[in-house]
Length: 257
Image (cartoon, rainbow, N blue to C red; front, side):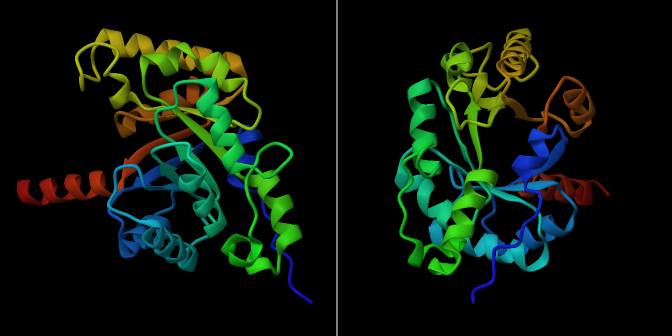
């Protein structure tokens, strides 16, 4: 008899019950650094595969390192909605997917189709090679678990994305819209200027539209001190740190001392 996948309260379930979670990005593609971040106490971690120098095997090594020391939920960010970008990572065992720069309901539907099994999506199944399904030995448990717990996040990082928030949020299977402020400056104010009135107004507008849509609101804090105010404005999930950012801060502080 095979053992069932343990039942626990997933990140998706916690967020849908209005728990607020603070997370961090992992860019260094280093299992050792990932272990340190996992032990630090963040509510969730996001392994980056949009910008970071990490392939699928590297991302899996990072996931295994984190799982060896912690049960913290682990999401993974990808650069597009292609099934080949999403499906192998969910089969590897990540708790959810974050897709960068979503600009339309059509893209959102492609994400859902890749991330969810039928009837909601069209995610293909080859359970004997799926680590998440115990290589076929926990197939039925995993399908139910995936339907219940897989968190699907679309990032809003452009003027087109802000304009399409209502349509993106209306796609069944999209759980969260996550505002990416830096890339959003490409459409509002001087590029890279996170203090401009234009970007501040755009972020406020996006926040209001996402909350009105009924989707979860997520975003990246410009500074760690911004987190309490973001939670007060209705964010359910906020990233306020990254492995690279913390290392740079610590290195500069050491030089100054």
